[in-house]
Length: 107
Image (cartoon, rainbow, N blue to C red):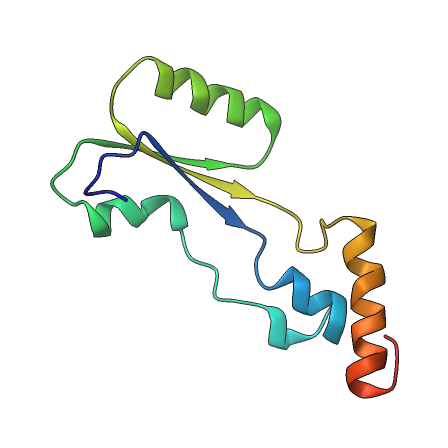
């Protein structure tokens, strides 16, 4: 993506596997992933390019990132932080059904 100069790359950071949390338990350590600074990925994959990196935790920060992106033509990466349990109710209900089907129990 960096080589193709796509204008904005979004990385969703919800600290793990929310789908698996719905099936295997919301707080199971199995579903947690290492906490990296994903907003710095472009410095790894495109070290010679002039880029924008953003780490966004709320709508105000997202608006600021978009304003910065609009003002220039740089490749940009926006890391979006979400709560690990931020998912639609449908996912939690589906997770219960799958846990029952797979393991004979609900969580």
